[in-house]
Image 1 (tube, rainbow, N blue to C red):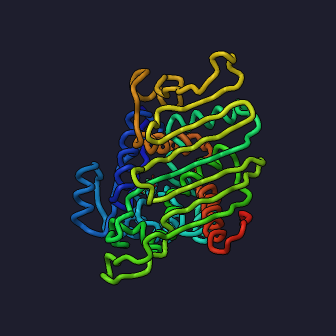
Image 2: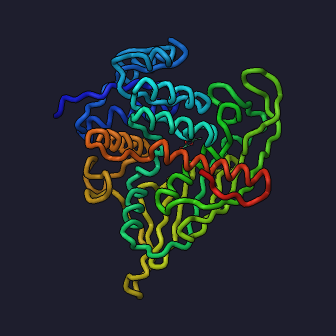
Image 3: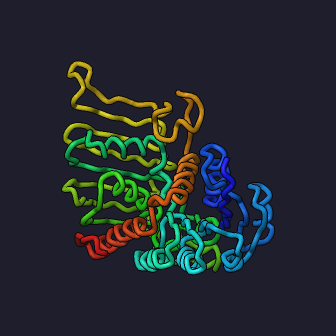
Amino acid sequence: MNQKKLNIGLIGCGFMGRTHSNAFRQAGVFFQPEFTPVLKAVCARTADTVENFAAQWGYESTETDWRKLIERDDIDLVDIATPNDSHYEIAIAAAEAGKMVMCEKPLGRSAKESAAMTAAVESAGVANMVWYNYRRIPAVTLAKQIIDEGKLGKIFHYRANFLQDWTIATDLPQGGEALWRLDKDVAGSGVTGDLLAHCIDTAMWLNGGIAEVSGMTETFVKERQHQLTGKVQPVTIDDASIFLARFANGSIGQFEATRYARGHKALYTLEINGEHASLKWDLHDLHRLQMFDHADEGRTRGWRSVHITDGDHPYMDRWWVPGLQIGYEHSFTHQFADFLTGIASDQPLSPSFAEALNTDRVTDAVLASAETRQWKTIGN
Ligand code: SOE
């Protein structure tokens, strides 16, 4: 095993702080990369929280001020897992301090923020990546390989949904530690930036750039008490967002995300239809890829459900034995393992800040289209 170390400083101890920490630990063990990840420091505002988190996940030290963490000489990589309103400031400061930067999605609260963050990492020349983890679910990665091999032929359609139901209760407050996703100032937008951003990232990865969009959003509960101020305030995030898209390759797409689809907790589905074949994937059955291939012999032609657990499936040779499944958390481990391989071999890291900026350009255009009731061309 190589002795090179990569010292990680994580900022943020919430849900994403946990998924990333698990990835840092598992990637080192299961992928045995050239750089061994070291959980050097973790930062959160409250001393108790950060100390408990450090003890639970095995971080060597703690900070309560992210600026101090960035100043430390013993940190190589700054990982941002805080709510969206601090991504901008932390990422720019980390890049200026010459640190590698990984950032939770969405990159910024708007393409304007993301553009400045991208410029900062590019002018500092530091390694950078954004945690659009669903690309690294083996079934989704296999879909990418099949599409890139040309097996689908000309693409006609792309469709994706991300459905949840956790904000239906009218007495759910907005804002604060657990509910910042409902506060526009903190989150930037509602489901467009939170959920559709995942769908857009995967879509552009699988099917290329999006040229124009026409969007529609709705806020079903108009006022909620703010957790921090106690005041009943207008809700300004989008609870649901739907858009149509034209891809640069001539195919057309439809996308939907909502937190009001009763019964659905995190149902991310995607489908792509080409001239020769189609592929379908579903997060609730994440270890299966559905494929219909028109080249199959006619009498037995039909949808195949491929169980993505074999050694020749992406990433699977690192895990158990054929037939045994892995889960959601592995997508983060795979992403971090790819990051470590990328920095060791000087290969492009993807999704980079620049790619995540393109996603934010699409989410901005969806919101602008919904507001103006007009089609919007994706700018740059
Ligand atoms: C929202 O509920 C959320 O946690 C998103 O913020 C994540 O990005 C998504 O992967 C799961 O749902």
